[in-house]
Image (tube, rainbow, N blue to C red; front, side):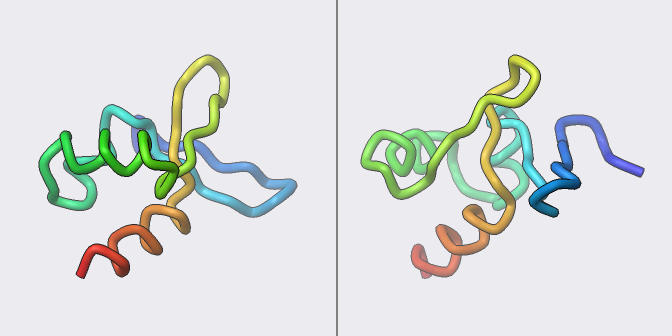
Length: 66
């Protein structure tokens, strides 16, 4: 079962989270996520009209921020 704001691509076995939920999911201010997207550190993909970030990319970003 998926929670609201998450998507799963069965073909690539990749989970995505809606951009609007990313900052809360990682516990950082929204401007940190905005900066990461702007500088290319955090790629964004559009799924069903919703801008999303792959959870694996989010974990990599979070590890790099430490």
